[in-house]
Image (cartoon, rainbow, N blue to C red; front, side, top):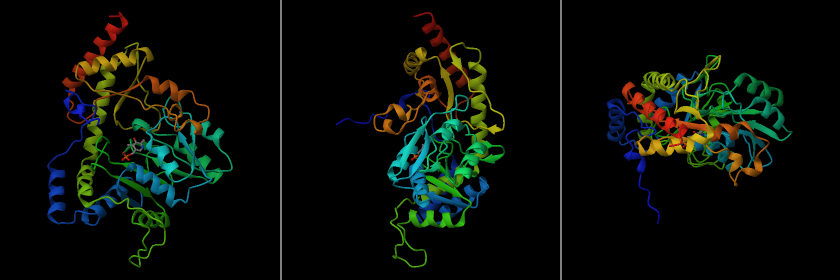
Length: 378
Ligand SMILES: *Cc1c(COP(=O)(O)O)cnc(C)c1O
């Protein structure tokens, strides 16, 4: 049997690390001492209310993770067999898995080369009479072109399910992501911007939809009549202990986002003007957030750079593989081009709150040295 020797823990600079303070600890102990350790309790309702309010949305439905948030949204919108759902080629696999789990057919489309998010033109080309929804993914803290996407959805009577797993707090034209489409889905995995360990949330302004999400999350059980099931539902609930962490994280979200922005700015500052590296431009009317700091590296340099960073005890991550390049998803792909290019060049660098200026200088100096060495063919 292959054992999982959690090697991430041995890096001097791991890729990510949750920021947990006394605030989270106090809340967890409170939840524990209350004995409300399952999915009822004061922290659940508090977390749902606070997170909905933070995003200026009427309802928050806390769930077990980001994948179940996406799947629950699909089910609550009655999307299934025979329906097509448009997804971007560059995303974490959970986006497309949720579509497949619902029995619908994903249609994979290309990304925009500037935002790295789903391409509006590619969406337009992929529309058919079976299209039922679009899942824009706000990738690596950047936001999709939501005005255009909502206009397409409106004209074609489609649902928009925002995948916000990597973009808590990001804004498109002053609106928080997750508040623009019909449902916004979030993940609170330990490496995301705020965390509950495992966890997720669906946001919506629609009262009926919110109710349906709640019912399906809890075995499809009638809210009036206990043990009377109106739908074939799921157990996708979050626990009170997880929500206790979430409430504390949410109180700190401004500080967390600000610190991440500072880290992003420092990386940008020290990685500027290197011919082999390309930084994403800040785009007008988008207030991006920093999930994992992202940089594009000349394709022939990336593998070697990652290897040498590892030797220097600095963890890094390549961008996701395009979905279209994996045998299990290939059949759902349309023509893609940008996603292949960006995927081969993208690199994420350590991004977590404890990193200070000296650490970033240390990491970026190492990067420069390695690139010089590769350039000189050493
Ligand atoms: C992390 C992530 C998810 C899934 O979240 P889990 O909580 O791990 O299930 C979905 N979509 C994207 C884009 C993600 O990055």
